[in-house]
Image 1: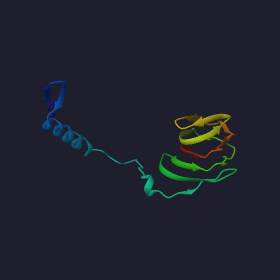
Image 2: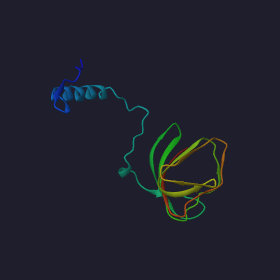
Image 3: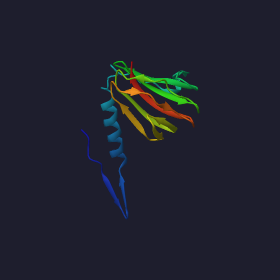
Image 4: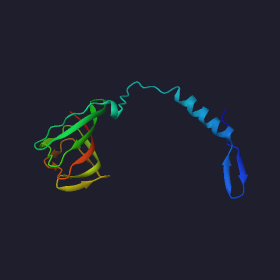
Length: 140
């Protein structure tokens, strides 16, 4: 049974008792004992190897960060001058820019920006003049 935290009233402050913090930690530990990893592919980026990432121009490299149900989560580092090859999406594709800038379908994107491309959409413009690091999720 989880007890509500005991609050110590101090002038101008609120502090929780050590026993209450310990109870919460024990509860979290109990909850994690029943977690299953069936169907999960959790990859540590520092343990994944870089591989070439091809496009129509320039250089890029990629790390696979996980796969499930045919989808792949990929970290890409594209050098200045990299451009992707035109293609049609057979399945949805998702992208999140971590660092740098890129141009996607005529739109400038920078860190924090992202896109979702629907199945059947065509990808005809993807390039970076400055270099960019991004996450792309796709299914082939």
